[in-house]
Length: 214
Image (cartoon, rainbow, N blue to C red; front, side, top):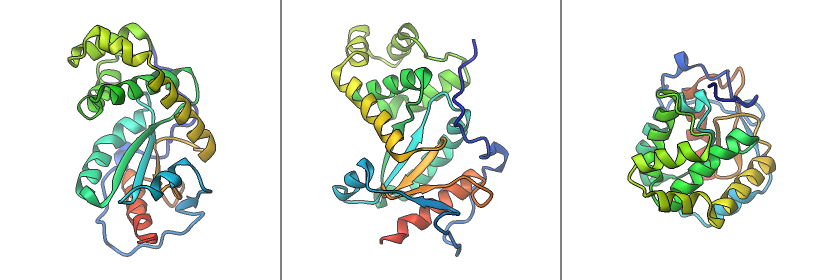
């Protein structure tokens, strides 16, 4: 079985070029070249209620580039510590992304997202367990210590349905062109272009954007 691939994964972010640059070195990051400025949106409203700058990744568990980016992003987020508020938003474009968005939202509802996030990526990309149906998701959650009843309840809950609708609306509102996508302070989306080619470039631009309104 092959996992269906949305057209909007960012093939330009080559895994072989994923070495992080030395942060803190002077760089010129320009609107329209390195990042886009976003209109007011749900994330910028959330930023107004946040004590720290908000950094959001839009991702899909089935995306190989999101999988490759994830450990680098996790290290970067850990380095930032309390200086940022980090969140993830699932991309919802089609049936496959919607199914994985449901699993993501269910793990949040169950309070186990931090513990199982890497395991979901591993199941899909290493074990070829694509988690694209209820049975495989229920079985996976049980391997993570969740009872069948609790997993069923979460996957079918109103709260999870609501989170999927919000994620779909946000991706549409922001016109996310591809994934992984990084959004800083709800106001800036890092571009992927000739000027922003590697995962390290993406995180470097994120650091610059965190300082724009400091």
